[in-house]
Length: 226
Image (cartoon, rainbow, N blue to C red):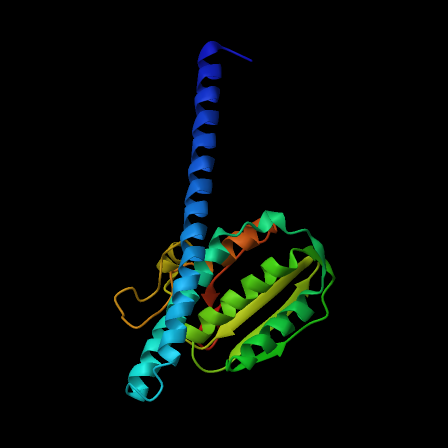
């Protein structure tokens, strides 16, 4: 309704919005398809490398296995990014119990982590999505932070906070928003860093899907608090 000029602008805006949504869906489908198709040849390659036992230098073989694991980790990030959180139903979740489970899983993988968990109200969350969120923060802290990682929960009124804290170099304030974008990485000029630059982007998207905020801030005494 309204003047013809306003109607024309509204129609054009709606067409643009639908076009952008279509492009996002196509990009996500393309990313998920490629990632899935790479799984089988990588599995065959891993098997071939394992069968080289005794025929190549042990250090060379380990390096090949590590490279394959890095590729698998990148594919995992692609698939996580392509996954839609909207397909998972909300369920009552104790955020402290979820944080503890994620920390214990990380500890089994060799991460030096401890917990400070508060009694928090049960929230309606998407459990698997929240596990990915906390897991990605733990992976990021383990990769860039070093030393002991702290997982903390707190409550203030109706608000619940889940924090992952490390003692790494932190992030300059001007870089924080950039690093929440897909395919961006810290230390871009540094070699030897595996990953696709999607970990924090996945965290940011899951937080938004829950109506939550995702912040990165300097930790008191040095390091980063996510």
